[in-house]
Image (tube, one colour):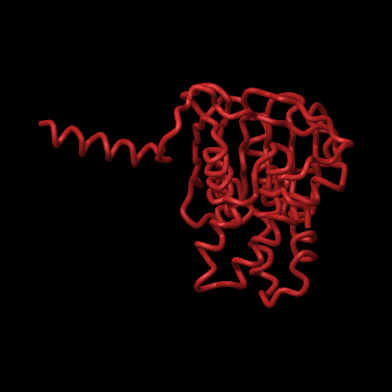
Length: 264
């Protein structure tokens, strides 16, 4: 097992950047909000400034794999003061063709595109209204495409797990998260602790499976050589030591209303 504090693969160049915008996109059942939320929480713990934008499906219970059912989570983390979640993602994680179709137009040219190849079968392409496979027809030229069979690798990681196949497949978002953690020098420990807190008491097998998969994703990115460059975002220098709270827009709105009522 590779510890996240160990130096990255020496084959990969390490580049310091001051900000990154990442967008996770997939079906509403793919755990994109949880995945983005965990990356956000870890980055906050590591001292970065943050802005996020969750994007929920246009329809309630839209058919899986269809365009109206796409859920996304965008986050921007930086070493300086920011106020928006960013306009142009540097990285897009597309869990299926529908997610790719909805969001590929926003990814910057030469941006990193990570696709879950397990969901690019003919039936999946048809649901997303693709006439040909975008991974094969040249339409993704100009992007750095990283093809990963998340389902296959997740199942291999959990080969000896007591979970059923469907439950194992639900862990695939953690594999993608592990890959991104390696790519951007994020620590694994906050997420491992979170999984223990969330599932450990009542569903220890689920906690163990997700922990193993996020570590496997990190290890895969580290040893497979799929990335020639890894990135590092330093902590925000303007932030003072203290206790901080991570709030969503609706939560801050409610806090503002309560504060206004007390001052009225």
